[in-house]
Length: 230
Image (tube, rainbow, N blue to C red):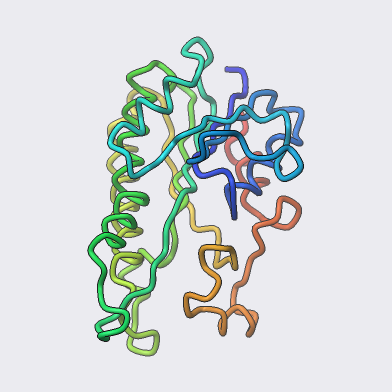
């Protein structure tokens, strides 16, 4: 299968770094990325040789169809990376109590939209034997790692990642006989536009497992290149 990579959530943070890394590698001649905007990102910010799928909003029930409508059905995808996420802090205080709309956005982005995206890609014939799906999750979804010292709060952030872990496991069972690999990865804590100022900066400043979402320093793309090489 010719290498054809799709990155969902490709305009900032880890997704943007992955786009740059893949686009710079001649072994991956076809790289597509999604953006919620109606136009492609400026070429001075992201690579020119990326095919941009515009208007892809993971909060939209038609996200799967919107995505496949902009892809060539004759060119199956070798790798699909779903990296989109959303993080709003919350606790039980009157100032930052749970927000219904924000919780819906976190759950939908992390664990509902990926199911519809995968289903649409499969239905369109874009996932075939040998295709790989990589879901970018987080240790935030681990129940075992939640403890008193860290405390509670951020309910939808943690629970949506736990839900994504379950979604990934179930998708792997459904797609196994079709020869499609589904993997779930935790890239490490990164300071990005999404995570800056949400309460974890103290751990970053202390050097606790921090990772920069840079195409030159991030360990995820080399892992994909080596572990998922044909």
